[in-house]
Amino acid sequence: MAGETSSSILSTKIDPTSQRFEANMRYMADLVSAVRNEEEQIREGGGAKAIDSQHNKGRLTARERIQKLVDPGSFFELGATRPTGCTKNGAERLQLAWSRDWRGSKPAW
View (cartoon, rainbow, N blue to C red):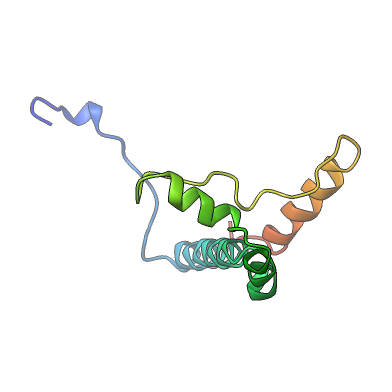
């Protein structure tokens, strides 16, 4: 930006060429890949058998109904990977299990 002084620029000690940085980047890329894979499975809506079952009953799946209701590209799903079946008594246990799945191995920090 115009008028910036050196005191308004943050400095960093991160070395993007270090082995530690590379290990952390690989770890983060693996986590992102795992989340994307899980989201793909979730979007399948229970698989082909479940979708066929809905269609055989003359129904659309939830995602198919949403696609018909909204303009293309205007819907963003939040929480697709959240733990399911959360009840007051079971939510903590499910959340811990879910967290452990994604954080099972430690980053190289």
